[in-house]
Length: 261
Length: 249
Image 1 (cartoon, rainbow over the protein chains, first blue to last red):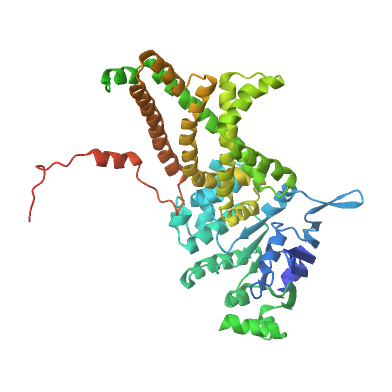
Image 2: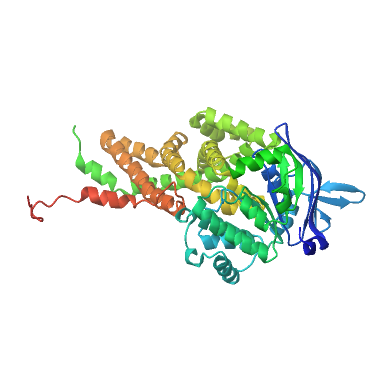
């Protein structure tokens, strides 16, 4: 983490998050903080709980225990008198719009064009006028270099194009942080670059980013901090140039061996 | 006594028959519409994690799919008055057909919703859409495309099932036909007229379904946009013109 980032107060704090799914402990107490404007990369073998953790951060999956604190406020719980009460799904929506998410399988809405995908949430959730949001949507498509694909349907676009529309769709809600769940894993090698470039530019603009990735080169150059997850806990953490070069644990050594081969 | 074209055509263009066909079509359409709305609510119940919501939906489907529609109709028309609830022929007809159809629509809609990619719901919620908005804007339109072929089956079946209403003396197509037969004693011609009207209704629906499938098929890679079905029909009835083209060897 850069010194400038570390000095800022954390935008997101994760304290002892536990999640059990189908009788299996997926997350066994996760702790970390994310400074505003920093990039945190989560790496680890499949099944180590990375995706579940990411979904806990925006409450797509509600953790069984532990706290997620966003800008000093506990997420998913409200204090009523002296007791804490779980928030309902409806009350979580406001938080979700502040944390954008991009998925491995893009998940664009197939019945909508690129533009319609982007303006759907601002229109439905924020109740904004189509004419006014369309201009912003065009700007977002320019940003992800897809000005020429405004009217294309998802099935007419390449994977890389779809993923960049998905990024624009998340950005349309003007999030304060972005979650990326293995966003290049489903892409052919020659298409990964265009998505990673967009992400690199976002990081440079100061967007707070939490990403699950197997792109070690990208992680090393862009991330401020790396978390290595193994069997539901954070096994190792630190500066990528440190952790990725001199792994302390045998598990991380073995993992790095596998992904770089 | 042989087949009499005169009787056939007289009744084919008889206003009473045409009117009865129109009434039948409207009753089927209204019943199918209500069945779809009730079926959608039932499908949500069937998908619910809460037993309290799922159990009534399961019981409903179990009863209305497991008993003959004729018995359901008789229960409503002759049974309810016994409990002090009076229903007209039209009320009994439409409600029994919709209740019956809803059980089937529930299963069809449940199946369509279950086959959607769970990533769609995740993505919709991640950008802040509520559960209701997710269903309305994202899931329902995608499910609609999947439901349509089975919906078409249900609707054509519904148009034929309306003939049951003749039992409670509702003036639908079959009842009017039967009355006409008692005037003319020409069952073959008149039942043929009725069959033609049922076919006409089914044909009308085929055209509408084709249009709907293309409308809801937008963006669905699995369902490429097809040519309208009438272009195939036109191609079929275009006769070959043997002298219009030079044959070269």
